[in-house]
Structures are given as C-alpha cells and as structure tokens.
Image (cartoon, rainbow, N blue to C red; front, side):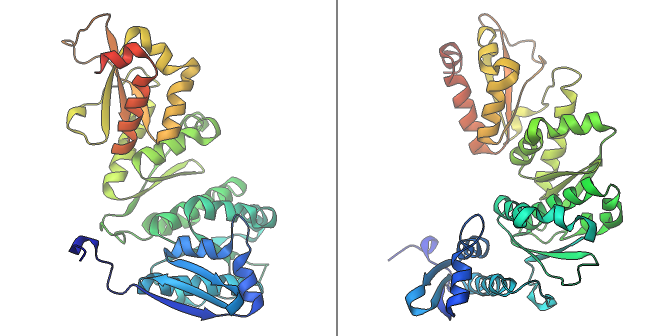
Length: 346
C-alpha cells in the first residue's frame, strides 16, 4: 500500500451537476479560455463536461467541489446579466470592490477584456453584480487571498488613474482587509508613499518591469495606486519587499552592500571576474534584466565591503535575490554565459 504521506485527503470525491444545453454551452465558451477551465483553476477541482449526457463532473475535496459548484452557477447566472449577490456566497473566498459609475467602462475594458486579463493574471473570477448603472458598481472577486488582493489592487489602480484621490476614501478598508486570514496567520498589507513622479517612474520601470520584478522576487503582491506602493503578503514577504525596495533606491546613490547575506536564504552571491562584467550585464543592463524577468529575481552588483577578497584580475560580487529556485537557476545561467565566469565559480 501507499505510505501515509501519499494518502489522498479523506473527503476527495466526485459529484455531477445535471444541466441544460444553454448552461453547458455557457461553461464551454468564454473569453481567454473556456469558462469551466477557469472555474476548475480557481476552485482547484477537476471538472469534466459530459455534454452528451448533459452533465458536469466535479472531482476534488468537499471544499473544492462546493466552490466549483458555486463558481459554475455564478458563471451561468451572469449569462443573463448582473444580479444582486447574496452575502452567504462568501465563505472566505470573496472580495467586493466598489467601482464609481464614471469609470466602470474603463475598468471593464472593451467586451470585459480588462477584467478577463486580471482574472488570467491572478487566477480569479470577477463579476459585476449590480443592476443600477447610475450608482457605484460592485465587482465580486473570487479566489485565493493572494489572487483576490492582486485583482483588487489592479482595479483600484485603474480607478485612481481616472479619479485621482479615490484611494484615500477606501484606504482604511483596503489596508486592513483579510489581515491574518492566510494559512500562516501573518497576512497583512504595508504601504509607502512616493515623494514624486520620478520615484514612481523608477519603481515602476519600463513597461512595469521593475514592479513585477519586486513582486516576483519577494513573493509579495506589489501594486502602485496613485502615489502609493501597496504590498500585501505574509510577514516574511513584506519584510523582503521592504528591503528590496530600499536597495533598489539605494542603487541611485551608488553600489549597495547586503549586510549578512551569508545567513539569508533568499540571496546568492556570484563572483564575476572584471573582464566578464560587461558581458554578463549586457548593453544598458539588458542581459541582467532578461534573467531577472525569466527567473523572477532581483540582481545587482554589490559594493566592496570585503577588502580581503582578492583574486586574479579582480572582480565584483553579483547579488541575486529571490526565491531559492530562482536564485540558484539564475546564478547558473549567469556564469554559463561566459567561460571565464564559469571557471571562476567552479
């Protein structure tokens, strides 16, 4: 038999929903992929359409099956237009975001395209749920705590772009939402305010690349809403992103040194010989930037605090920050780009 570590959860099971042709067709189609596949991803259940029999088969734990049923019913109901959503649909997997009427079209995008892209990025399901178009429209966001927060902040960032100052009216609720409600019991939200447009532009990076780099390397949800950087995650993730942001801005003043890097589990140091630095970095940092993008890491050359370090021809410490898999892979990739660098670290 299998060991205890391989046993399935005791409440794994399969159930079926009997549906009409219209409802089955609604689940089969959808923007950015079939609707039933999105329901499966967000609920983490396995879903099979048995169209000849008019059945939807759902496999998973009791919670996964219940959420898959709920999400499938919502998708089918929304085919008929927005409806008031009853509060009993929230079982710790729903966030409500209020969108002022003047910016509903901007937040939705043409044919709902903007919402669908946010769903795709954050693995969530999003529905406008109100019918009175003269008042603020509520968006219900379903998914994990991380996915819901990422989706919510994307919507708030879009609203703030069109209605500067809106974030100030919902700031308290946004910052305190879902505090301590993740599996670690440390989930929370930190924020910092940029001094000017120059700081935001630097922290955002070309086409948002620096923001994404901070987000992926730290594991924190990072979004800029107006003049504010909002960071949501576990306590460890929020500590990491604060440090990464600090080092990012310190690089404007000159080289940065990571104190205590030897004891960190998110830092790998690669010794790069002087004649390889330009090759590893690339023109206008293109090579380093490509590796950061590929592996979700933050990379910079450290200042020289260790005067005892010598070596033939000299060199520089390349600091690679991020999750263990990312930093290990990118370190190997960096040295593989040049035979001299490869020799230096073997």
